Image: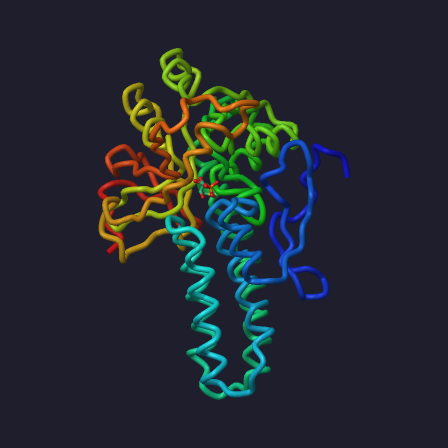
Length: 347
Ligand code: MRU
């Protein structure tokens, strides 16, 4: 495999069914290292450290992770099995708070156990494996359909901007925001893709630019603060982003900086599209104000990527991993089922 080929799975169960297999995304684009994780603590850490990241990929990793944990619970008693299962599930769920896909996938796995009063513990373990693999396979289909729907809004030759990485690396295949880019590329649309580098963890530079370039697309990297410059010159015809959670009123949580892009897009009349699997819509969260935003260590801003620290010792750092884009800035939410426009009401 050459360094620019993404002919591998982002997140999967290994052939023996004994470990979560992921690309360690913290090492990209320099090194493509596949790692296998068996212990729940290691899977928790991989999610927390963003070795596996992006809302759908986190959901799949958690589903496989809880299956692996369940497969090692050593009891024949259903009640004891359920007790230990819930403990592991709650632990995995604590790895990151914002992407709803994490709790969505874990709850779906829990329903396998709670909705089947007759199966033995061994039978439950194999049902859990089936469900985890189903969650993974469904993600690929969902992303493909999001891409088809998004492509129906785009024209050949468009300049498209994306933020962070809502690509193949954030999902099982195609990505959400990038799915229409992949499909358009296959069909000769000749898109010009722009990706923000996405401070502070550089998912745009390290991951999106890497995977789109690997696929042979026309991709241009720019810093986050260059968005207005691009849009003012008319170089962007549409913005496509992914998301971590959509509130019932259509407010959207996505990577920090997304709301800046949306605000600038509104200023220059550029459509701002949010690509979201239906599972990312969270009717139980009324508005963006109710979404828990993950706060991350200040070192990601002051030290990471620099040879030496680039801020005075002891300075306070504000480092939220996500922000909320107000629903009025969202031109449409594109799911695998439909293209939804304001007024948004997902209650
Ligand atoms: O912190 P990350 O890298 O997990 O954040 C990822 C994003 O914000 C993505 O845009 C989102 O999860 C959608 S991925 C299809």
